[in-house]
Image (cartoon, rainbow, N blue to C red; front, side, top):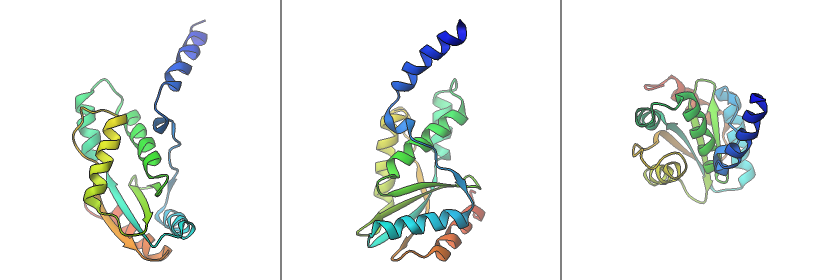
Length: 166
């Protein structure tokens, strides 16, 4: 009886979540696979340039965990990744490196202004996760590509996962 009750209550709770929090999590991949996928998406987009950004969500997650100690930090991190995957879906995609790094691909007619991207990300995430958390999701590193270059993307991603703060 309890499991039936639990299942019937869980369905409305899941249905009431914003669509971005029901988005699929990106699969974990090594930098080589991640770079190949990003390069393919860039080529498919036919955009003039693509900016690959390595995101640093830790300050946001730490602040959110401090503000809401009753929430499981792993669940919060998953919800954030789902939210970011939905945000970057139309511009290129969000990728999860097997080292735990989040990398976003932004394809467009010109390179991405990372300061503006951080600001827009903050507004988007606060809308769905919590307006009480003011700490931004930082762009730790970024690089703009003018053509799909899998090898150079892989090198950039490998540097990010080995660099400080990784």
